[in-house]
Length: 180
Image (cartoon, rainbow, N blue to C red; front, top):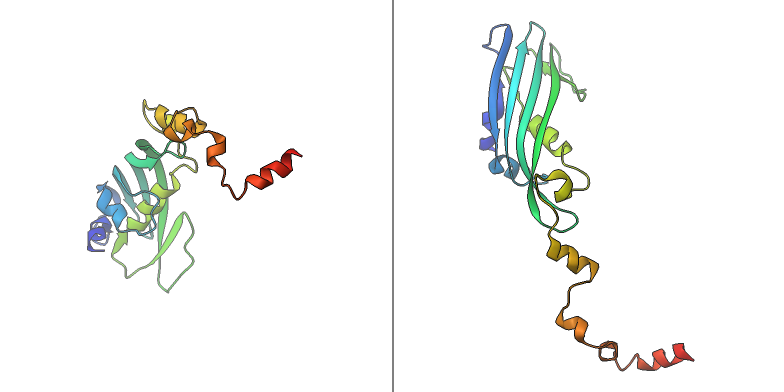
């Protein structure tokens, strides 16, 4: 998890105002998360942090490509992504465990914000429920050979064998019962 240390923003030394950061997200990032829906990708996260006395407002602008597998033809393809997110970080004196989707609560003694899990969640939420290369990919359509195999229009050696050769002789007697 040492790789994820680069996704921490040390805000304690920053002056009040807006500060911009850029983070590259690649395959090594996704390897750090065992159950990630995304295994490969190349994205750039532009993070704008507005520091105020009692809170931080963090805006994310994430763009790039992730690798998906088409649910129809099983072809791996690159899907472009571009989205924005926002999170508010509030500071309090005592321990607090009730973070919400848009508000994160930190202790006033904390000095850095770890955004690795936020980036992971934001990217994985953008993965379509049903991935199809002709819909999410750029200038790509499903593999015609695979579509033909799925629809059963490809001639194979198996199809040239007649139906009677496929029937197990032990079941042949049952076929006669059906015909009577």
